[in-house]
Image (cartoon, rainbow, N blue to C red; front, side, top):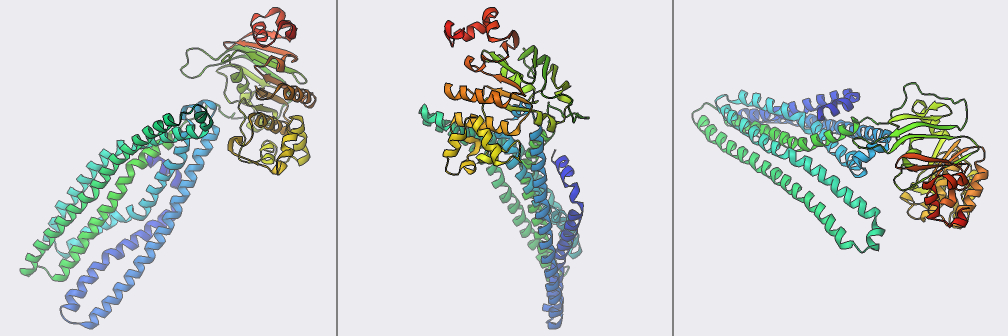
Amino acid sequence: MLIKLLRAHLSPYKKPIALLVLLQLLQTCATLYLPSLNADIIDNGVVRGDTGYILEFGGLMIAVSVLQVLCNVGAVFYGARTASALGRDVRGAVFDRVQSFSARELGRFGAPSLITRTTNDVQQVQMLVLMAFTLMVSAPIMCVGGIIMALGQDVPLSAVLLAVVPVLGISVSIIVVKMRPLFRTMQERLDTVNRVLREQITGNRVIRAFVRDGYEEKRFRGANTELTDVSVATGRLMALMFPTVMTVVNLSSVAVVWFGAHRIDSGGMQIGALTAFLAYLMQIVMAVMMATFMFMMVPRAEVCAERIEEVLGTESSVVPPTAPVTELRRHGHLEVRGAEFRYPGAEEPVLRAVDLVASPGETTAIIGSTGSGKSTLLGLVPRLFDVTDGEVLVDGEDVRTLDPVLLAKTVSLVPQKPYLFSGTVATNLRYGNPDASDEELWHALEVAQAKGFVEGLEHGLDAPIAQGGTNVSGGQRQRLAIARTLVQRPEIYLFDDSFSALDYATDAALRAALARETAGATVVIVAQRVSTIRDADRILVLDEGRVVGSGSHHELMDGNETYREIVLSQLTEAEAA
């Protein structure tokens, strides 16, 4: 998965990567050349007392060192830029894919996990790429080059390398294999910590209201401890790696000095060659250590890449049309034919054979007990879900064939739990219509019965709104969401229990103003409160996902027992009449 992800997202950066590899090659060659120069200076300059030779080759060493530094700086520069670009592209790809998800896919992954995958997981892959560009490219070149140069200094002494390199490789491989499953567990437990923390921040008022601080603290401590335990286990293996490598390095250095001394004593080797051989040994070991550092990061990055690819490889159940309809002949006609919706793996569908017709200039209401499928039915129209059977038609066209932009302009949904974005009142109201004037915003606020409280805010339309609208009340949040829909001026209005947080007087005033504002549009209202929908032109009664009644308030009171029970649970017989 890691290779697949990198191949897909690094392909646009072939030229910088090629230049980076060239710079790393030059830098590594310069590094490998320096010990040979040093050996020549010792054997031909220092031992013989030739000052001119020392100065000449000393200058050459300085020039090679400068070249090494310049190439290293260039390689790090291009490596950092390319790794950062990769992180940007992958985050953008994950974001785009998540934006295409329907409510079904969002529920499957969960917000905490998607946030972790978009931030922490991408960062782990980005760090691996950065380390690969700055370390891993030069490590194999230095290792192979170091072995060749060491053989050039003394072949018999190079036999030590035959023992050192395999021992290092086997030791590192064993540790890396043990680390991989721990890294997957670490990322999953990081998801858990994010989920618990998100719930506790979002539900802070509930926690305080029920005085559950101690319970939630214990819950977070448990999730945090689980993450700590696996992190400590991973850390132990990581801590074991460097002592293992250094032990092998030190033992090999002792062996080289021991056997090298005997070679010098017998006249088969010069002092400069031994010095160069030790330097090459250290370069080989450093290359292995750089590879070791990389291998420590690879398992975690591989796990993160799998999690990222899981998101990128998930297709939305709401698929954009291949040949979208970009223009509608009629305006505002909504029809649902035999709609069925079933969640994956569910034994029973949420909706079964639902039929609905809503025309411009009419108000259609949907009422039913909790869990009867009212919100799901409304969600089928703007394609928050797609029907598993049947059709949803807007102006005679199946919504699955409509261009998403056209559908969004035609249909607007005020959800049961309205969400406001961080910004100002004005930026939230203009969310569906960025070109709306201030006069249009004030008019929408007046219809939504929100003008009074917005005028009371210190900065009016420029008053700040916190993320989720947490700095305004539930009723104010609902009215702002309704005003946001009015600013968009769609042809079909969908209100999903959008008046539940309003008092009766505000509810009545808003509905009266709304009726005048939406006189030529199609309005569909889902409500639990009978007073909100009793004056609708048509009322649809849902029970366990089925339509069990349809008609006006008086018709249903006379002939539908389910509707009658709902009404009499809220009103007296006289009030209902």
